Every structure is written in structure tokens, then in C-alpha cells.
Length: 63
Ligand SMILES: [Zn+2]
Image (cartoon, rainbow, N blue to C red; front, top):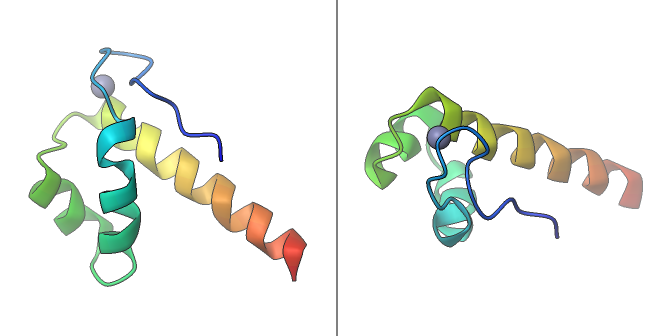
């Protein structure tokens, strides 16, 4: 699966928290998950959000 390793804008590593993010996002609102993981910059949040949308799209093709 394609997960960007670093935020394109600020260079923060996003890949290491990505699995955690994916798990938590199933049960909680996205904003709370970001708070819990300490992702406070909009540029980094965007990295997670675009990747999650991308995965949802792929799963629809597999049905
Ligand atoms: Zn960033």
C-alpha cells in the first residue's frame, strides 16, 4: 500500500503513525485521532486524509 513516508510540506515522518491512525479512525472522529497522535499541523493532517480516501476508493473496486 502506498503510504507517504514524510509530509510533503514540513517533512514530518507520517508513515510510522499511519497504522495507528487507521485503527483509531475506525472508532473515533478524525479530529480526535489527530489530537491523540499529536498531529497538529494542517499539512500533515492532509497527508493522512488523502491516503485514507485513496484506500477507501481502492476497496470499492475490490467489491
Ligand atoms: Zn506537515
